[in-house]
Length: 99
Ligand SMILES: [Zn+2]
Image (tube, rainbow, N blue to C red; front, side):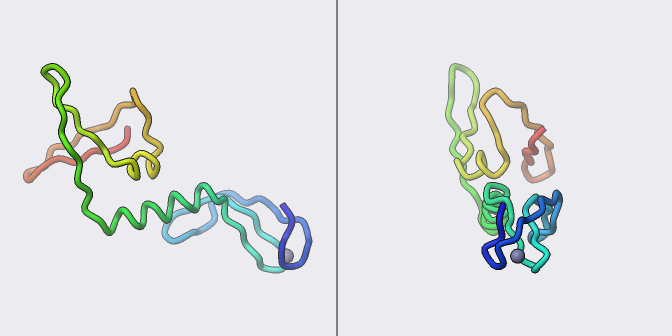
């Protein structure tokens, strides 16, 4: 990766601070920083989602209720079909946490 500012080669760093998350990216000796675009996008998406209350619809397949999660959640947490999540029951509802 070359720096757009000074043209020097940039070094790859892991776990740089980006908002309250740490993501990977490139740093230049001139101070220029490029964040991994895919990781940065996820952080921005997470920040956006944290400000919202998401609505999900329940479906039914045979006798099982199916919870349909919004696409944004799927992307923000890298969720995939067949994957397990943890469900924690609380007094006024429940919380779903990626396993
Ligand atoms: Zn530079």
